[in-house]
Image (cartoon, rainbow, N blue to C red; front, side, top):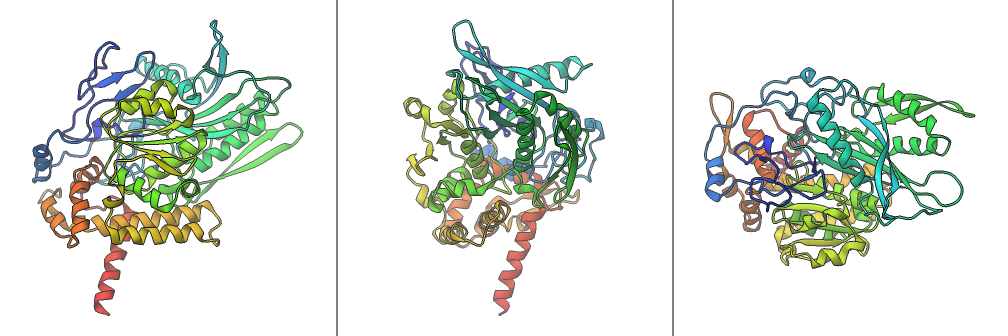
Length: 537
């Protein structure tokens, strides 16, 4: 499994696919994957953008785009900004999350359907319990002590995939190493991680680390729900119910999870009700509701606003937009996962298309030496080790103190001054608005500010796709950039069009006249209508 949801080479026509993994004693080679010794995970070592400016120009010079792929095992269907919200391309779940892959609904050619968010899928694939087991040398290692459900009669390939997945999960449930000892008090924490297979299919792990009820010293354990579906708030509520039942008895958890597994995943804005029996309390009705805005249901922007100033958030956003290396530091796993998910969501409707590990396990700290872009979260206790690594230029953010530890140096100049000031005003207003109470309102208001930024910068992209008789298009990059009159905006745009996230978005747009992101397209239309109204008045 590949940590992070975005190394989908199969989705990038013309880009290198990962070849056979290296043996542990080989050195990484561009275009291949690196196997970390002692780890079941693959780390990306290949660049994700075209290999040269000439190649990039060829890609923009009217080449015939690749036809959309059919959905099926190991291949992805296109979809609208699944959660995590920064993915404009959904991936198939290989039949593991509900209906078999062959039954994935097929849209018209080029149409973006949402497999990742399809209502009616199973809520989850597995519930696993990861406990700490004492080894002969005195250290504690995380091991899976329970798995629900047990899948039987798997084909050889499916069995091997399941084994790789189950081998990777414990590492991410206890990413903070093996230095544990029995304790009497522990505040439960919620965090998440994402694993991506080499074929691009991905799974999200929603974790609740808690201390089992009892007397005397005990070791914490993690309840981890593995799902193809991204909805952090909804799964946090499910984990609340799991924790409540864990304090009664392990035996009470599994009937609840079985009822959940038999319930269909609701459509955006809809509710599903789960019946669950608890001894001495009787039957409970648990309502699980999805947010109306599907592209924001894996995000908590409030977590970012509470720890960083709006100006620093814009510096981070600008660095992510240019696909630089970003490292976030915090001690709490929940803070790391929430804030990094939020940063990636600021890029909507574009996608962070490189290595993405919200909570980096201690044994994978060497990832920060990777020469390609990455976005990772590391516990603060490892700061000194991180600073000692021979890494290239990177933005290092301290989420505990709300400051930048190391920067490239040009973060203040990346965004055009006028647009940056407008976003600052908007973020400061949201940050100080006492009338905004719910996280959904904060999410909507913050997202609106960044979507409007992209509308102003690239909202004219549809006017610069030259359509052929076959219905496919060719993006005219030079004319697209020249259409911007502001020199500062044009300077940023020339850099942004070379990024992988923009290439991915445009490649989808070239395939069909159908808008690629309905929400984004709506904002573009509104923006142009407002401009026309101002001219007329």
